[in-house]
Each structure stands twice: as C-alpha cells, then as structure tokens.
Figure 1 (tube, rainbow, N blue to C red):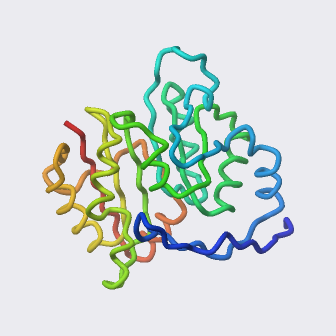
Figure 2: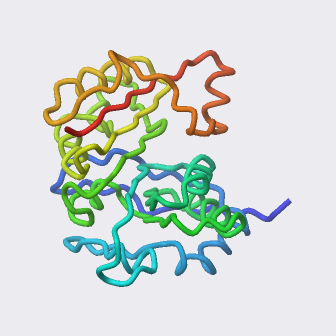
Length: 241
C-alpha cells in the first residue's frame, strides 16, 4: 500500500464576492497523488490570475488564431474518474475540470497521464472566481455539475452552487446551444434546482421535468454507493437559447 500523507488546504475565507460553495477539509494524499502534482502539474494544471482571461489556446497547445474547439467545464470533479473517461471518449472536444481539493487533482492528473488523455486541463481553484474573470461570456459548449455538495441543512443552503446569482453567472458563460447538466442524489436539491433553472432567463429544459440519464456519463463510485444506499439520482439538462 502506498504511503499516505495528511494534507490540509488553506482555510476557507469569506470574500466580498459572497459565500463559498464549498469547505476545504483535511484529506489523505497518497505518494502517487503527490508525485502527480509535482511532476505532471506543469503539463495539466493551468495557472489562474484573478481579473485575467484564461489563455485556452496556450493551455491546449494551439497556435493563436487556430480553429476553436468546443469547451466543456466540469465544476467539482472529485477524484476525476468520470471526468477523464468522458474526455477520452470525445477527443474532438476540450475539457476543463475545476476542483479545490488537492487529492482529487493529483488523482485526475495520474489518470490523464496513464490513459493518454490530451484534451483535458485542470484548474485547482475556486470555480466561481474562474467563471467571473477567467472565462468569457458565451464561450462554453457545456457545464457539468455532478453530485455537488448539497448543503442539506436549511441554514447552509445559501452555500449551494445552484442558487440565484450564481446560476445567472454560469448561464452567461454558455454559448447559444450550450448546455448545463446537473446531477444530484438529494431530491430536495433537485427540486429546488429544477424550479430555479426553470425560472432563469435564456435557457430551457430539454425535458418536461427531470432528465433521463445520459448514457455517455460514467457512473462514479460515489453514485454507485448512493444507489446501493437507496438514494436515487435526479438529473437536469438545460440548454441556452
């Protein structure tokens, strides 16, 4: 068994922008994850500077002015198992995974290297800050949000990723025809998100209510455990007009 090292990310800080959608917890980082960050970080991890757009041409090794490829962003990819599989199955699309938890970042980079996935890059940063300044309006072909922190207690629901204000920000970055694909195992979160998205301007539901499972989305370990525990999966798929 690989040696493990306990790591702690920086403590959560409230900012003038609003309330964080996540809490950084202590985690276990294996030697392999630590090595991946040290060795593979320059290859797969993008630098982020607040107030500046991401240079996606440079990130994916393209010459300036070369034809643009669709870009899909995943917010909070966890350990990245589904993330790398989706990207590997669609090499003609660029993917950007955003995650704040260090072990998952290391694990995903190891997957990318092991499986030769060249169309995915990582931002180890707060997704809301990235959407605010790093991504241009009308630039994304899709946004994936799979099993985000549900913040089930009523007093904590102000921290949910899908909430008024933040939803409008996410939608503003979608290009016409781009989609937002959301999956949760918490029925109340699914219901409130359905209502919120249904009343958000500029997007429409591809389904009458909840979406069918998209067969290209791999099942994660978290999802399999949730299903074993009797928790369902509620999916939403909205498209920008």
